[in-house]
Amino acid sequence: MILKIISAENIMFQGQVDSVSLPGAEGTFMVLPHHASLISTLVKGNVVYEHDGKRGEVSVEGGLVDVDKDVVSVCIY
Image (cartoon, rainbow, N blue to C red; front, side, top):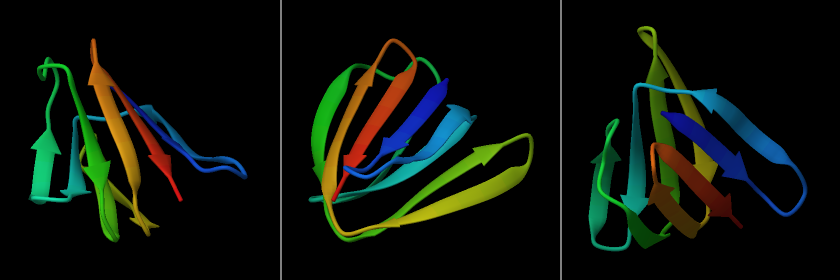
């Protein structure tokens, strides 16, 4: 699936991932390929993603996430 992490200033990350963990308002949740569509708010924490056994992490103060058709779009502030 494709992960896009976008701030008002630039694209923080864009690429293929195997999984992504997000700091939701109700707790951390994970998105895997073929996940059902959803929209959620994010709170302060880390967006953690994995691809080919490698891990990446982006610290966020909050934002929104939209999951649809194997594309995870994270808008952060």
